[in-house]
Length: 225
Image 1 (cartoon, rainbow, N blue to C red):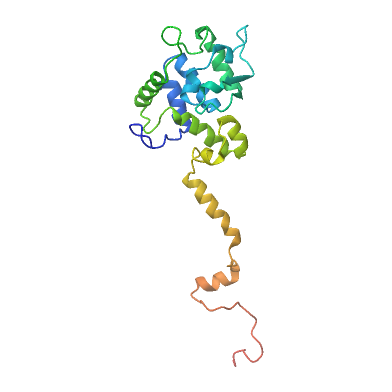
Image 2: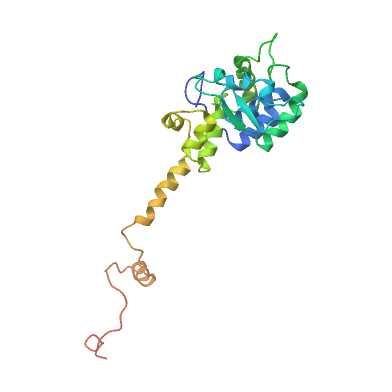
């Protein structure tokens, strides 16, 4: 888990997400920012530098896709457009009156909200609701892992995340204990040991461990009386 900027940001569970958005994040601005990060799997800088025009049309209506511009991505590889699902659309519609003229999340002066400020807001929210080991990167890891858990092909997930290398994408995806158990359990169909018949199991239960089944005795085997 992430501690003092070291380690891997934890994957957030649904109860933890509900707790964060209901009790931890008190401002609509903050809930909107982190909802964007969750529903688009974007990084903190990508979220903070969004332009209002990347989200709304000139009439204030939420667009079908949000745009993450190439210059604001980590390696400046390419611009990404990500569909806005209904849950996020509802939040963005409520947020429109607070949106900045230029930047969706305005900061001081004409600048956008600083990523460090957003990180501090998130950490305070986590402390408030008792979530340990999370960072703003948790939203990205949670979103990508959820897609993977739902059997979305890696190349499709990479279109959302912006990864050019599937090996790098794999590093984001968490493998849970129950998934490992399920993977190993699937090998049971390969078992070379056939299940014993009910008749044999009864004999074994009675203490007879020899390899035999009940048969009708022959004339030679019948008792003399």
